[in-house]
Length: 207
Image 1 (tube, rainbow, N blue to C red):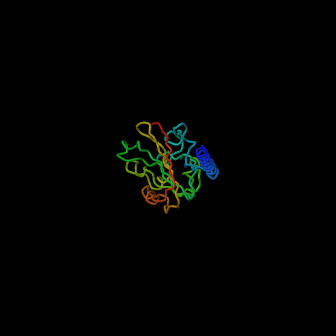
Image 2 (image 1 turned 180 degrees about the vertical axis):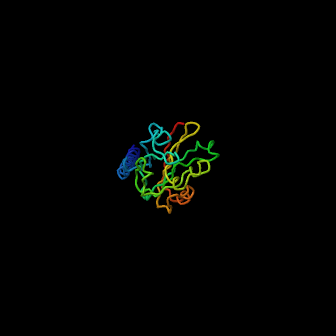
Image 3 (image 1 turned 90 degrees about the vertical axis):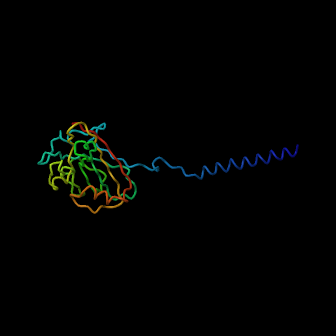
């Protein structure tokens, strides 16, 4: 009988020690608040409402260059960029142009060395603090517009049906060695190995 009592007492001590050890471990574990959790970079645009791009940023707008190409650029806002971000680059493209362009995605806007988190609407036409590449209106299919006129935002002008446009924004850990009029492929070559985060914002525009 005494032996059984001793065993029971011994087990009770072990259980108590284990319980206390677990409590201490919980106390020592740091609690991460919601503000400290990793946040994902996001991009929004007040010019895209419920997934639809407003008329003024494309062919139903009022701002055009001398060749009739829409020039009133979309605004955008970048939030929760990763630590170490030095600059941003962007590409606005239309993959739905593939059947009507002769086999390629239509480039509407490329820009790099953006060092702020917000671009105002129509800033493409006045920007002095970032560089812009050529769009697809410089191509044969686009009428071979001059490099000078093509180195800006060229708005939506779907010829056949509603198209979905993709705005890709990249957070980079460096500035790029690019000048106005750069080619899209050169931007991607220089971004290789320097992309900290990326986000794609989509919107549709009707024919």
